[in-house]
Structure formats: C-alpha cells, structure tokens
Image 1 (spheres, rainbow, N blue to C red):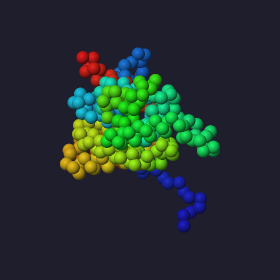
Image 2 (image 1 turned 90 degrees about the horizontal axis):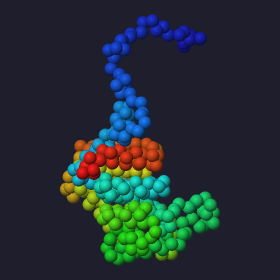
Image 3 (image 1 turned 90 degrees about the vertical axis):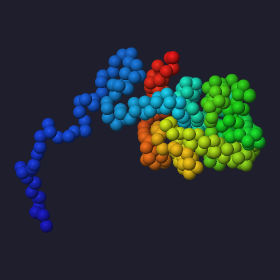
Image 4 (image 1 turned 180 degrees about the horizontal axis):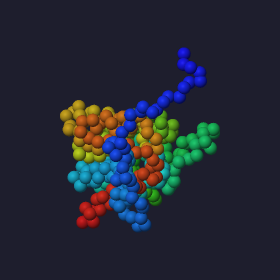
Length: 321
C-alpha cells in the first residue's frame, strides 16, 4: 500500500522542449481583426478569426456563391420555426435572387406559412388552450389546407404546389410574406414532407389521409428528382432535427440507386443545438465521396440573416450586372 500521507511526485527530472520549436494550433495570425464602423459583410467575414466556424462560415458562403455562379441547385430544407421567427421576407428575397432554387418543408411549415398569408399572424399559445382540447382547432386553417391538399391530389400535384397555388388563387392579403405563395408565383418548387398525426390539420373533420398520402408521396418523388440533380450544388438543413434529414438521406439513396451522379456537393446544418440526425444524415454521410459538410449552431433569427447578407455580398458583382 502507498505511504500515508502520499509523498508528492518530484518533477525535477521532467523532460522539456522549447515552445519556439513546438507546433501550435493557434497563432496571432489566426486572430480576429477589430471591428470597424461601416464594415461591409465581406469585410466582416474577412475579420473573423481563422478558427473553427470563423473558417467554415466563409467557406460555406463561397461554396453557395459558386453553386449560384455555375447555376447549380441550392435547396433549402427547413423546419417551421424558421417561419415563426419571421424570416420569410429574407428567404423570399433569396428566392428572387436565385440563391434558393427549391424548398422542402415539414407539415407544420404549410400551416404557419398559410396562416401568415391568410391573417398575417400564426402560432397559438399551446399551454393556454391544450387543457380545453382546443389546440389546433382553428377552423379556417384546417378547412383551407385540407381542401387544397384534396384538390391537389385530385389534380395529381404535390402538397407544396397545391397549397402555394391555392394561396395565390385566393388572393390572401399577406401572400407577399408567404414562402409557398411566392414560390408558386416565382415557379420555385416546394415539397412538403408529412408525418401523419404531427400536424393540427390532421385532427380536423375535413382531413383526408388518402389525399395527404397521395400528394405527399408525389412531393417525395419530386424531392428525389431535385436531389438527383444536386451534383455541384448545395443542400441546407435549417431547423429540422429529424424529419427532413431522414427524407434527404432516403432521396439521396434513391437518386444514387437509379444511377444519378450525386457525390460532389455541399451540405450544411443550422440549428440551436447539434442533433444526431442532421449531423449524420446531412453533414457527414452524404458527403463522404467527394463533398463537404458543415455544421453551425445558433439562433435562426441571427444566423439566417447573416448567411443571406454574406451571400448577397458574395454574388453582388454578378447581380449588379
């Protein structure tokens, strides 16, 4: 047994080396530059420390800008929270500029987006109404969306197209703030990927599960087509922790199984915290054969405007012409 109390170890014989000859991971050349009044976004990115996200974020911006220059797809997959924090105008502007070429939503996305179009507001206080069994029971939301999906299924189109065209046809007062309405107006494809029972419209009397399945599967096949053309392009997953990462991985395997070359492309995940599925199914696995994946943690209401501003600055010469 060791003596008690233990004798402190003698460090006098420790081997040392010179710090001047040692490899170091951080140097003053990596440090940030002080911020200056009136800096452009390009100058701000150039002033970031060349460490971690300070390297990755400008690299992602340049990859998206290059995809735009080469007229390759830039697909945005997003959860509904992105809509709820007020980012539709920024995303619509990116659609107009060709910096978003397609959008994939979960089922909640069409609910919040359509309520924005119809009444200019969305997102009820669940705790206030759940006890009375009233959560999700807004009559107009259920009737309008379920009718659009049923009519879309009858016409052989997907949920995204059906809802977008319905919003336009009804001339709702806030269509200019709706991703679905403006995407339909700009002829930008929107696909909607639904898990049955997750969305409030599934509890309404007007729901038709067969129509949701038919129109939703049409959208999945459209999404597979979009992913099959992703070589040289970009896929962004913003705020979807489970559903869209799973859908993306399935679409990618379908595309590759059918012989489409989808290996050299860029992916990125943006969310509040790092989840398993986006990191695995979006960032890592799909890019193992020649692509590049990025992972960023932060609030959507800060990160998405920053990304948009950086992209617009990066392609401004092309836009200005």
